[in-house]
Length: 434
Image 1: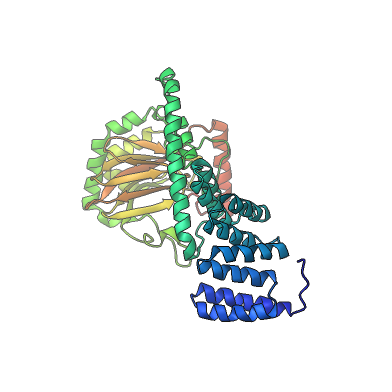
Image 2 (image 1 turned 90 degrees about the horizontal axis):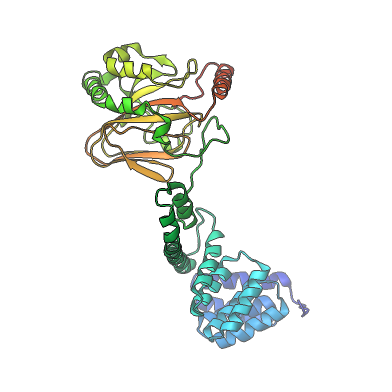
């Protein structure tokens, strides 16, 4: 500060804190009385000048607020709040260049100051600089941590920031699409899925998900949500057997319902997170055919066609760990929350059997509807979830296979490592669901 104050600094700070609390609570009379005390104590202290400027801003007197703020920054030019209040006074007086200069001083001191960024975005809008405004608003929104509780007076400004950024992304998307038409025409037969995902991610329309397995993450494998069918030539055989598999499922579902068990079955004392509602619940139940690498002989005998098919297919082969195969039944009006699987060294196959309308499945950024007779293979180490919005249960045959991008030697190494981890842990399968 340029001025030496002989008064008690702590008393000044205490009074200004009380003034700010009273103003925030709407007790303006109390704030005015406290301000009188502060002015008597130190009329030229920057804190006091700034508090008085705020009072004039609230009262709709930007001219007085500007004069007081200029005196405040003259006394202490290192406080972003003083510059922001000066900018607000200039806004009220229609002094756009002076307002921008004050905001730039605030942002020089604190480049991520949310209020200064929001006001700068608003000012750029007033100046007709919509793209610059969107960029500044984007920076403002980036400063807000996920789940942050923001004061009510910022909600309108933040809502406006979101609106402007969204509109700018839409306009940019349309501009890019127009420019791309010639390129698309040159490559009419090309597969555009990866490029379009890239572009949609840039425009904020679609996320890029990566595997986040809860147990074993094998690096340098592509982050594919649904794997290309061409990598699994045996899928056609699986699909051709759908009617036989469905008939066997319907028989055991009707006659052997007692052997259905909850898919999620955590013991007491385990953090449940997203599984709290489904833990030990028959709303998501299973009928195991293979479990932790062991055949459930009685169940396989009930489903001979399914058993024969599974025996012919390539599968995850880790002693006492894989394969796993089961009928998965999701009750009506049920939701499997977003979660990730244990490893990307294996993939999961879905063979839809009984699929009423209103059943869908999301892996990463892709959501699909199950259709009987249309199997798919996906990486369950990428976040996924499922819905049955219908009034009847949905049933799918599920089994696991090796990730085809692992070499035979890599599979052998993974097999040995997983078995070692299992034995070190006392024999419990590290790939167990629960």
